Amino acid sequence: MRQALPEYPWDAMEPYAARASRHPEGVLNLSVGSPVDPSPSAVREALAAATDAHAYPATAGAPALREAIAEWYGRRRGVSVAADAVLPTVGSKELVALLPFLLGIGAEEAVVHPTIAYPSYTMGAALVGADAVAADDPATWPEHTRLVWVNSPSNPDGRVLDAEALRAAVERARELGAVIAGDECYAEFGWEAPWDEQRIPSILDPRVVGDDHRGVLSVYSLSKQSNLAGYRAAFLAGDPALVSRLLTVRKHAGLMLPAPVQAAMQVALADEQHVDEQRARYRARRDVLRPALEGAGFTIEGSEAGLYLWATRDADAWESVAQFADLGIIVGPGHFYGDRSPRHVRLALTAPDADIAAAAARIAAAAGAPD
Image (tube, rainbow, N blue to C red; front, side, top):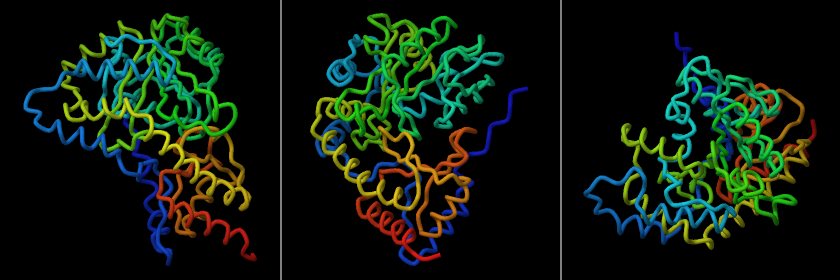
């Protein structure tokens, strides 16, 4: 019998959200990484210009979009891929949750994911009745592994895997005959050395795989770098044989990206200025929030890249969530991200500047208040 699906974890936050909403100065939601800044005007204009979309869009993506994705991989990720080895997807969460199904994985097979991880990796395994195995060390991945997820930079803890670590992961996945997929959606946001100056490596980086993409996929989204979360604009690239298989299954399932969104993606992929501007916004917010947390006794771990601060005061995460709620601030408990993080909380940098500043002020004031 197929295992029951777990409850949606964020439902457990409702009492704390209600508690935070009673703060006299209002609630500040730093729990969910949903962008608040405007989508680029040129992207919105491209979307509007393409709304006469009377025909079905191509599941494979329009040729111009596939060329734009391949060109972007070369320019921004240092990776050479052919236009027929990329594929647009309806957001990246859809792909994460459905990839085990799309690959034909089932019971008595395993999906490996990081020990501190976005919960959709586990959900993808649950949807097909496979084992979800939390393991970071490739040597511990079980023999029945058929899919491995690596996430760099990581959600929630912002850690980056260097080329050597990625290469070891790919080699082990190939020994097992497993597909390995790199979730790289935060790769434009490196904050600490060396990633503040060096490109965060892709799993398709030549230092990782040479020119052999066999069994390897890179997954990316424009939700964060371009503020297109509402567009559901994402894509993958890698092994041409795998991409071809995924394309065939997606055709049968009717998983296609709307034509106006495809047109908008082409514009977003070609423009780097808006990404630079967004990076500067997140850096400024990080520079405001991090000192306030550290001044209140929190240690920031990882967080060298990505859009979150991964904080601990060595107390149970629910205790910290309650303390933040009393300040009118909603944060994410580490319990949502696996058994290895029961004493951490995640704070998103995707709130407006004013909310970040207000949160920092409330945290600092509470830390300075007498017992």
